[in-house]
Image (cartoon, rainbow, N blue to C red; front, side, top):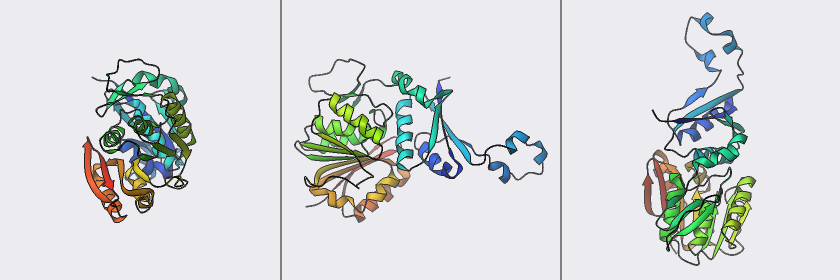
Length: 307
C-alpha cells in the first residue's frame, strides 16, 4: 500500500462550497466536515447521535483530500493557498498532524528538479544538478507561493511559452505565484516581463526568485487580475494567465485591450468540464482560438488577437 498525505483545510461554513471546488481540482475524493449535517439527517434515532456532535461548532467546517505519494504535496498546498487567497477565503491548512507553519521547511523534501518543455529545467535553489548545453535552468524557491513546475497547469503554460513566444517579446504574467512563468519567459529571451499577483507574499517570492535567476527584466507588482497592470510601456505580445476557469472568465471581456495586435494569450488551470465555457468567453471577448493542450484533466489554450 502506498503512502498518502492528508491535506485538511478548515474554513467558515459559508465557504465550504468554494473550498470543495478548489480541493476537487487536485483530488476528487473529498472528506467534508460540516456539523450542520446533523440537522439534515433523516432519522428517527436522534438519541443515537453523540451529544458532543450536537454541540459541535456550526460556524466552521473542513475539507480534506488524501494525496498519493506520486503527486506533489508542495504544489497542492501552494495551489490551494493561491486559489483560496484569490477568492478571499479565510482558511487554515494542516498536513496529517503537521501545521502549515511547520510545513514551511519540511515541504522541501518533496520538491525535486523537474523538466518542463524541451529546454526549461526547474531546479530547487538548494540542489545542484548537471544541465545540458541547451538547457535553460530556472533556480526556484517557491516558498508558499504556487509554481514549482510539477503541476500540470504550470507545465502546460510553460510549454506554450517555449513554443510560441518570440524573442524580444513584451510579456505579462497574471497570477505569477512563485514567478516561474515570468522567469521562464525571461530565460527564453523576452525583452520585458511584468508579473503580477493579488498576494503580496507571492510578489515578494517572485521578486526573490527573479533576482536569484539574474532576471533584471522582470518587474513584479501587486494587482487584482488586470487592475493596476502597467500599460505605460504599451500592450503585450504574450500574456500568461495560469489561474482557474472562474477567474479567467472574470477577465475574459477585458484582456483584449492588453494584447498587442497579433499578440498571444496562454490560459491554463482549466479543468475539462469548464474548457468550452472558457473558450467561448474569450472568443466573445474578441480573441481567436489557436489550439488546446491537455494533460490528465487539465487544459491550457492559446488565443491570439488578430491584427
